[in-house]
Image 1 (cartoon, rainbow, N blue to C red):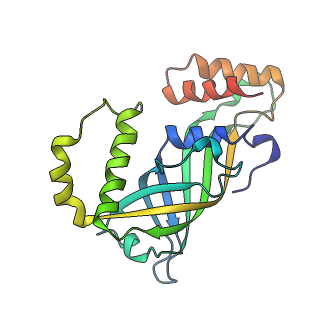
Image 2 (image 1 turned 120 degrees about the vertical axis):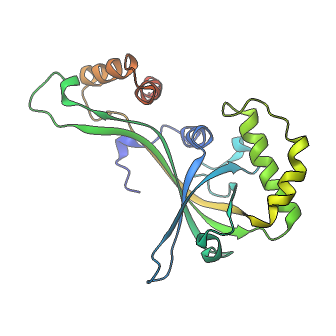
Length: 216
């Protein structure tokens, strides 16, 4: 991902926060000339045994967990030792030139994204696959996505579904974050964009404004 210097994240916590708050990643791997690349949207979590505070600045060495339907051709194409790219998308919005209150001007799109590269390890055992499924449920139920649902009574149902679930682990080799939040604009123009987003009826714009306020 091409990231101009003024759009780089202030520190790696911005990347980990975006990944945690927007865990539906697009996983992309190379395919054959006939098939082309494979791409699948799927939830990704940090390995619960990981200490996120100890992750490197570029997240290298971090371990992530994911799973997909084995009926998906992507599962058969994914090989242990292969390379995968995960893209996570955070708050984003169109910026109309009317907000700038100057002319000439050009529209743009403010957005936030993290690209994670890593090496795949397909998980073969049913026990470990179940651990990934349960860890994923637990991560989301304990976060803002769920309601604290107790999965105990549904573990038997999980077991019935397990033969169709393909779980995998990714060891991160590097990551880049792009946080394009009108940093290229003069302070007064950036302030007008922030004001517009803050009072917008669009939740996505308000979330973008929250990140803009955190910029150094």
